[in-house]
Image (cartoon, rainbow, N blue to C red; front, side):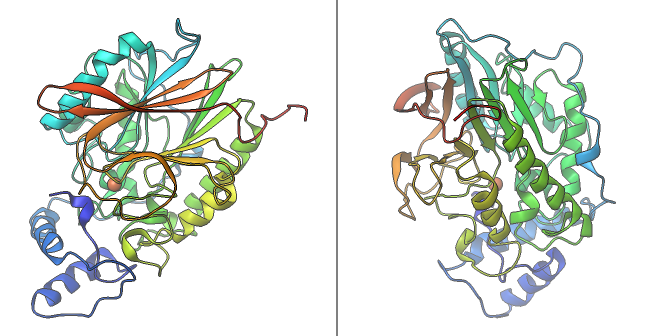
Length: 407
Ligand SMILES: [Fe+2]
């Protein structure tokens, strides 16, 4: 079972209200308000059992910190360096994975298949698109889960990993709820001790190469804009200081970027043909400030679309390379969340796609040169740990000119 299947009985309840409603529902409780598919009570009841059992071990939100003002953290001793030059093919090659942090055989198989490709493709950087530590994030800054669900499976992929926060990394009482963003600070703290895990703050940018960037990555925290439950901590409210600062930062960073190509990486997608749906109507909800992702939709449309070439997301355990459209302002949405889990084999929505796969495990490789962006999508057979190149998409025109460029 995938815990991302959980669907609350009503948008924007707090976690405590949700848990209380769950017990009422099992006794024939409240009616449902959704706009989409039939809510999955079986999955939710299963979750509730686990959540209640774990509640005594799970902390309520801790006092908010101010990640945006935190000094950037460098990696641990011997941290793998960022590539300064393109590989032998004249490209920067980046491994893209998502929703990988299970520690089970499928994660190991996908990582092993990717590792085999890394040398051949000259990969110098990797991306982890969130849900890095299932089911509800690390319990401490040095939780053994960092080893079991990241370091050991990815052993041999010896490059910096740009990591972003997923809903499972920031959960409170209910695994996957995204109801305790403060837990994400543990993943920031862990970066100071790891050679691979790069997360200097909860949102950040990385130009590549640093001196004269060809591509720039903008890592964002989508969780408080799209949690399954309402945020209790005022700092992390959708309209609180943290999200206002992040939006302002991203707007300024995209405007100031001197890179030819711009890539936004964040756990929740803007557009998505998988079962979770798109921002603004996640999981069939079109009401409330949180569950539907309506404020994330607004941010994507007003800050990112038409300015970034790619949005790389996970959350749905699928592989999708959607087409740039007028709606996206020419920005391409990519979903790559099948690096440990898969979905139901079904397209639930019809956004134009260059290629999509809803049933296989896999990963992608992004290749960047001055002339083009190339996205290679690989499916992985878990039994043999072998990858198959399933699709290749190329684009040659940046969506927007870099800062300082002449028209
Ligand atoms: Fe997720």
